[in-house]
Length: 528
Image (cartoon, helix red, strand yellow):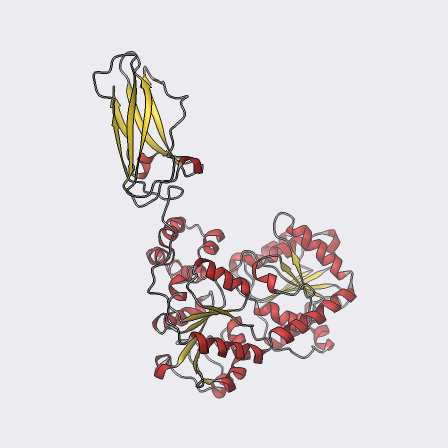
């Protein structure tokens, strides 16, 4: 096999992102394995030491002479130009975050272009995305929407193949897009030398943390999904009244972390450092007795910050969720999510801090895991092997987007036709007749059968006489099965004509919601 010619596209230092640090660790090990070129991301600075080590090429040289492009994609604004390049030059994409919805919001709604957001989310998720995104028009940005709709389909389907860092991530991608080709490679993390205890002590002293105080650490860019407020609530417990916490990394403004710390009256025990340079980052981790890496919901990322914590031999508590299942239980203890999360975290921290020998054993297991599973030479070889295979494939983007058809469960437009026969005059007072009702679905959504419960369709019958509904106690006839666009169902309804003038009304209803008349659908009404 001829040597792989690889064009490497990623943020690089001094850009403040874990993917830039990841690339700096990986590149020296890729270099001897392939014909490597590093592509400069338009508009991003690159440190002088990096420029001197690798002669950077321009983005317009990407992929020339049949070279394979390797893109590194994350869920923030640093990857805007990378996404554009990946869409115009299909290659192999390392998907560091499965969910790119926040990235989409930032480059549309974040720039006051809601219409672009609606266009893009419809392209990514069809009617489901468009329907779910309406709340954004009024300023609602729920986590459930952003994590349920990953907004990555057009990008990942444009690539020749994908690389992820966990089996969970691979399974999640293939569950929705089975025609993708996805390979799992380890994230290369160097095993550092053990930090000199003097550096750790100096770091503690710089923050005024007593040398004997138990110390927890939460590292990396802090967002609500990393649950720092859960850690703060745990520290409010009497069980942990003597424990300090370092929050090491930049903090998202929306988190309002300082406010939460003040309200919990923990300003003397919770230390927010902001961004840490690499040497200080290592000293901070080594100063901790136990680290936290909680996460819910997840964008599917493998946390480089977590792996660096393990590489420095620090035991860690993680959420019992998603990609954390790949971690060895002797190095990372799982904390269940749900109503008892704070209590479980409090109990686990107290128990582990009371067992120094167990903490030491977990620390050794953590270093062994990184050495055996995440060595950069091993990761580089896996990347080269994956790119050699995937770079020869054709992108699957010509196949149509697989979006399930809309249904009456959520769709906002339910067009149809309603015909009623058998009510014609003369209809004597008191006579019972069998009316025939034919309901036809002329819209784009499937109408669910009445047996489905909420979202199912049934016929509401109203027979008004002297201001009273004579059919109010009668069960509504329901669709016997799902009714696809273009299909019809017929019903027979037994009705006795009351004495005097009366008005009969027939209208389909969505169970648990509303009548079809507010959804563009049919209603039939007549004097009898």
